[in-house]
Length: 176
Image (cartoon, rainbow, N blue to C red; front, side, top):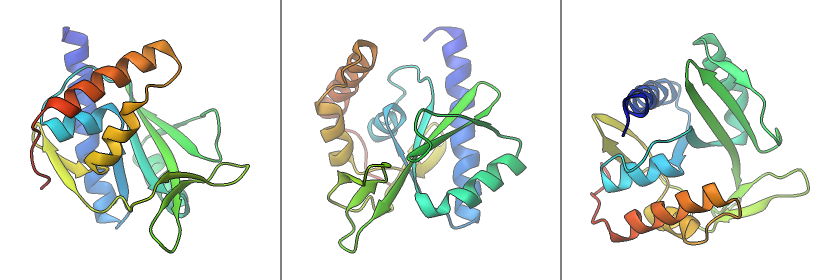
């Protein structure tokens, strides 16, 4: 990685540590997903990341927003505020995807036109460590399934293919 990517990676890991501590202190559930989740599952940084993707319960968002703004984070608009929110501190962008669940523990994204099934299984409370940082993480099988079908946008599709390759071939490590 080039130096600026190394600095951004270090900043993002520092943010993950502080967000984990903040959310744990306030008993707020979250799950790391996306490219950073791949890295935590394989135990190594595999590529630079533009942002940090976290899934959070929709009903916990007002408290999350208040806590982040009190800590100096700046709200950053997203395309669809019914399903997510963004916050920036310095160069780090946190992107939240809101989730809800049903009585069976299935996870849904609350789209304005109606909920969309995201996972048939609960996300659970698995934690993985990377670079001295420990955080909650989506299940490996869920992450692998999501990366198996690349997105339509070619730069995103390239990241998905690379993430799938490293996640499916790496032995990884056990959650903490």
